[in-house]
Length: 362
Ligand SMILES: Nc1ncnc2c1ncn2[C@@H]1O[C@H](COP(=O)(O)OP(=O)(O)OP(=O)(O)O)[C@@H](O)[C@H]1O
Image (cartoon, rainbow, N blue to C red; front, side, top):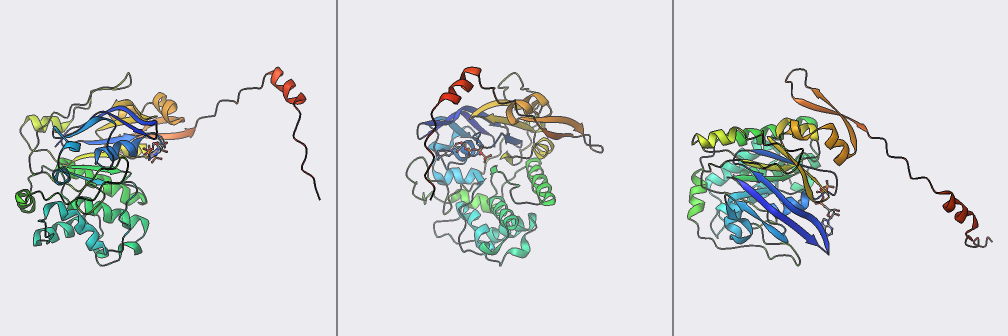
């Protein structure tokens, strides 16, 4: 199922944090959102998983407006891993992962054997099965992150949005998690019994109250959206250029699979700080700077030395991985431009400007 973020703007406290951003992710694509600190990645993603209502624009899941559909319906299609999780409750790991099944359960919230199997499988996929009985609060940062990824996987979403999924993970775990997302994107979705049963459950609309301000109700029993959809998608995966640096060369295998009638896999939109991981694992990248999409396209086309100097203020060298040939980047600090020299007038003024009297010393 594709997700289209169309002309999205976010205004908070009189400041425009995201401006007219369009991000399109085709079914079964892995798309990265990259940008400097404070550029608007999390704000954009929070709108995409319904933690924040945009000031303008729309988020479409399979063509349907996320912010117009019931929270339960949205939660069946899309799951999210926020950057900061509010799941700091004193639950066991099993209970945290089981929260991911809530959108598929009846109003009584009774877990089925299928739910238990989905949770166990999700924990196993992030190598965290041994943590099942542990208290969530006793885990290390990396262990918590893996458990929260397991919770998102247990939801068996069609679309997964992740805000810095590699936070706290060591390099091996980072590679594991991104490979896992890639594998799910390439695995056709066929639904399952739990999904089909859940689709029969009447939408009870059990939501959390919206926080004052911009926050909307998200999913059932958790502040982050949990999601699932039951329909197969066959989408175009089209991604439009947004500037001179952009390309449409990355109309990917998902497009061909869709055209061939094959059901697409998981659709992934993820913020990533590590540009090498982004280059290795993403079909497409969107670059955001000052709340605006500055470039988009295939990693090789987007991650140019010029863009990296302009947007990230680093000097980048592009090299090839000696075995795989994949694009990798080596970085140096870009020398800061010299501070502007004070004019002679300013110096003269400074020398004649009376200074404050010195504080008395005792
Ligand atoms: N609720 C808010 N009120 C005021 N300013 C906000 C709010 N939320 C975010 N901002 C500001 O909006 C800008 C974008 O924040 P955002 O968290 O989206 O950036 P980011 O690209 O995810 O950054 P990072 O890479 O550091 O996580 C920042 O300057 C941030 O301080």
